Length: 92
Image (cartoon, rainbow, N blue to C red):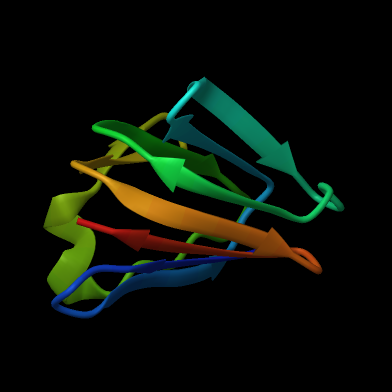
């Protein structure tokens, strides 16, 4: 599935991933390929994702932590939409 993370400054990442975990308002939840469509608010926490060929623009690499192939990005709040194997996260 495609993951796109957009902040007020720029699109931080646009890449193919296998799994995504986000801090939802009712707790952390994960999405895999072919997940049902969803729209949710996000709270302070970590966006986590894994995949085979993750690509992050060099200028934004320092915003992410890579621990054994799991990338994390701290956010303060945001919104997520999952539809047709594309996840868009608008994050602060």
